[in-house]
Length: 125
Image (cartoon, rainbow, N blue to C red; front, side, top):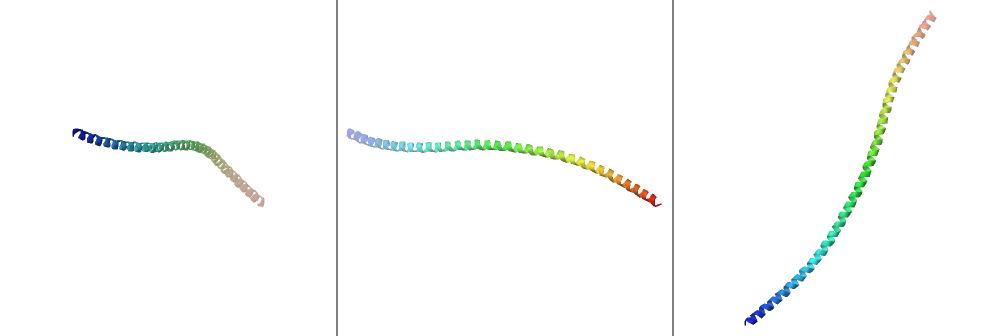
């Protein structure tokens, strides 16, 4: 009877072991699938990160070039503004000179008019 009991227990244990082996095989298969999916996802993410880094480097390079161009344009416009300011100051000095000359000429014209009137007055007297 003990032998029969041991045999039943052994058969039950063998069935349980078989079931556990089947479950283990299923888990191993599921693990392999998950690992494959995970590897594919990691590879895809690495590709995206690489592309992002390349795009960022390209944008950084483009931004640096644009920044240099903008600085060059700014320097050009600063130079033009400085030249315009110099020209304006020169024109203002020329205007002052012209105003002074115009005043002198007007004064001379007034003197000559007065002299002409005096001479004309003298002629008629």
